[in-house]
Image (cartoon, rainbow, N blue to C red; front, side, top):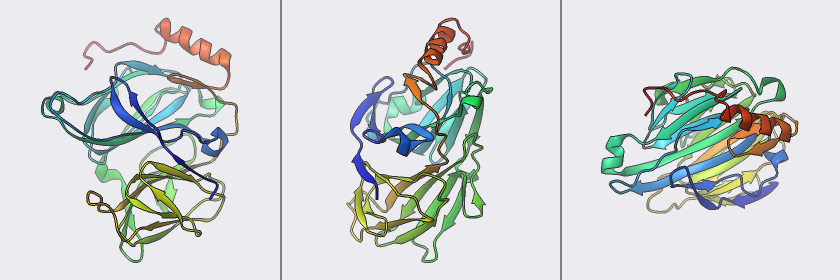
Length: 292
């Protein structure tokens, strides 16, 4: 195991709680990923659910995976819809896009459980200015696998695990999995050694690697290169956790300079400045007349 880090807590958008999953990890260990927030897990009271205002992006892709709860999405190219209970929204910002994410009015009125993940996937320089696109991936579209013992559920959201591919269409070669491992369960995942490998615990406690390094909720492991990723769930979990819930990420490193500021991920400071100028000039899109 190369490193174990614990995600600090913060606030995003209009004030919904997040954990900054990549905090303290070298960008070279994350490449091609640049940012990830665990949104919640929080049980909102009436009137408490929060979202984000309209905002721009350029130069990368956002992946919003809703584990529990509901989010509404709308963007400036006509994409959008409801993201809820296992669904994923995959938005390629590319040359530029405006979007908004917020809970529906009914959820704001009643409150409720909210838990999800937003991941930023970098684009190589040759695709930074590609046309934006939107993918709505329903929970039923995700490929489901198990292990020989039947004590694991593996959701293939994007990329492939062995011969099984997920529904997410990606510009950058990556794999995104959500693993639920029952108490005492053990899992060895085949892995492409060209990819980096990251495991982030959404809930529960267990171990990673052949050395069985302890890993708990809110922690991320950076793995060394290898053909397999090994996960084990502790025999005993806390009272609110039925399984060791782990997000497994990997991708082929792009290996290019990364310049980030706010909602833009480019290669140089000059490109960041151009992104701000283009946004202020309205060249990254317009808020639709029927906006939410």
